[in-house]
Amino acid sequence: MKATDIAHLLQQEPSLTEVTARGWVRAFRSNRFIALNDGSTLHNIQCVVDFENFDEEVLNTITVGAAIEVKGTLVESLGQGQKVEIQVSAVDVLGKADPEEVKLTILSPKRHSLEKLREQAHLRVRTNTFGAIMRVRSKLSFAIHEYFQKNGFYNMHTPIITGSDAEGAGEMFKVTNFDLKNAPLNEDGSVNYKEDFFEKETNLTVSGQLEAETFAMGLGKVYTFGPTFRAENSNTSRHLAEFWMIEPEVAFNDLADNMDLAEDFIKYVVTYALDNCADDLEFLENRLLEEEKSKPQAERSEMTLRDKLKFVIENNFKRVSYTEAIDILKRSKPNQKKKFKYLIEEWGADLQSEHERFLVEKHFKCPVILFDYPAKIKAFYMRLNDDGKTVRAMDVLFPGIGEIVGGSQREERYDVLKEKMAAMDISEEELHWYLDLRKFGTCVHSGFGLGFERLVLFVTGMGNIRDVIPYPRTPGNASF
Image 1 (cartoon, rainbow, N blue to C red):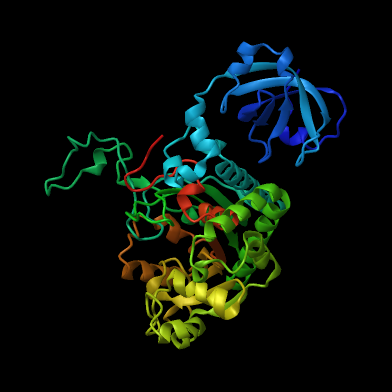
Image 2 (image 1 turned 135 degrees about the vertical axis):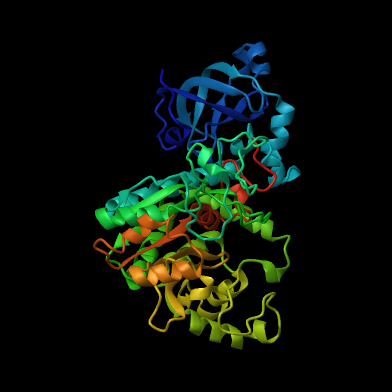
């Protein structure tokens, strides 16, 4: 008989029908009650064994973590917390497990830190916490594609190997086919990349934006959703060396249209998570409440996890210029009393997470979109304003996390873009194709980038970005 997902079984009515379920044993009590989970839901289904009439040898192999198949009838449960249970007629142990190792990891996660669990690829996702996170991550991924497909966007796959540095930061992983112990050199001692596989210096991409712009100029509305890489040696709870980015680009959209799109998009995917991940979000919210009990009152969140998500959905995003934000921050109590780690003293400062969170959580008490940033702290491709000192950039700021989206109206004027590239020492030869977009039917266009893990971090309430990606890649760590 074909097995039925436990999530589906738990929604059925008692019917005395014969069912088959497969999964991993979460608990086995009194040689009678098996708690079985197959990953389709946070909840286990109770399987009741008539141990007096069961093969004792089989019962002895039903240990925590073992993979089993049970057959039986779906009956009304006499226990609390579940509507149905399986009255077991047969058990087949598909894979044995060391009960002590599994029990320590899955049943007592408090004994092991989240860091320790990252080292246990074979058991990590079987814990309630990581099972919930990864189910939410999957639903968010689906919601992202659904939103763009419903709104007339075309998905495109941008290159993972590239010769351009979209951000201009230089923090990129090199790609080469050379024997690193015997790379060919030029007369000046530099590496001769003309003899390499691509006959030029190449890297892993930090963004698909520039390539997406070319497709937007032909397809109108496009989006990318793929892996990106940054060789930034930041060993913090907010940085990864490999992460996923969502990057829409839209022809004929100006900055106001871009802000509208970002707000509508985020509200859609967060609403989808609330509607489709109720059990997992409730579990993660309770987990967060327990975690915060150990923190001083001042460090605890003012909102529960689901309240924070509803806060985003139910509030219009306040749109504030960078200049106005700087004035607010300069006059703020934390700045005047030197409570900020990074004091705001003058226009032109690059805002930190503490400043962004103050604007969202304390001052405006709603999500905020900052726009018109100083050109000196933003990328070369952002459209220069008429004042000559600010660009049409925008950042979306959320409670508890600060910036979650960064975007801009792109510089569509050939001469202006050329001047900006020269000023920032960006090679025209390398980006000739990008400049050509401004020569053949140029138009106003805009887009933004959203780090997927940053979104998952916000929706799940986790404190470390390494816990919301299946296999984190960080400085000194490329396990599995």
